[in-house]
Image (cartoon, rainbow, N blue to C red; front, side, top):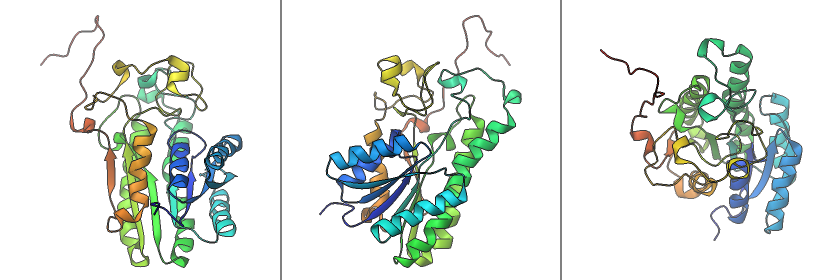
Length: 288
C-alpha cells in the first residue's frame, strides 16, 4: 500500500522548490494535496504536475502570514477532501528583497539590515508556521489526530554568514515544534520539523541577478559549484529536492508514528563540522 494512502495534506510554499517536489511525491504515495502558494500561477503549475502523474490536488493562492488566508486554506482541504491528516508549513524566505551576499546577492553589513526585512522573514518563517498549526489543529483533532510538519533549516544548528535573521527564525521553528508537540500530543497530533541543508531550491541558493522564484540554480548559472557551499559537503554531492522530500515523507507517514517534537537534520553530516573561515587574498589573517 502507498505510504500516504487515503491521507489529505496541505503544503504551504508548494509552488516551487521543495514544496513542489513533495507535493508530487506525496500524491504519488496516495495523498490528496492542497497546494498553497503566495503565487497562484505557481500553485496551479504544481497541481498540473500532480494531475499529469495521476494524482489529485487543488491549488490555493494564499499568503502564509495572513491568518484569514491560512484559515481558508485549511477549510479548502476539509471542504474539498472531507478531512485533514497532514499540515506542512513549508513556506520560507531568506530575505525580503532577494538573496544575501553569501548566496550571491547584495553585500550588507548587519547594522544595515532593514527592519522591514526582519519583519518579513519573521512573518513568513515563524508566524506562518504558527498560523498553520493554529488553524490545522481543530481539523486534525476532528480527524482523531494527524501530523504538523514545519520546514526548519541547517541554519538553525550552525552559523551561515549574512543570514542571522533567517537563522534566528529557523531556530525559533525548532522551539515551536518542541512546545507544540507537548501541547498537542494528547490529541494524537505529532509535530516535527525537517531541517534541510542548502540545496537546489529556487528560493535559496541563487547567483547574482537570479529571480527570487521561478528558476533553478542550473537554469540560471549552470552546474553546481561546490565552492559556493557554505557548509562542507560530506557525501560529495549537493542534496536534491527529492532527498529532502523523502525525509518529509517519512515524518508525514505512519512510519514515524511514535516520533514527535523532533527536528530532523537532512544534512549529510555537514552540520557536524565547523565552516572554514575564508579570507580574501589581500586581507590579513587575525592574530592573537
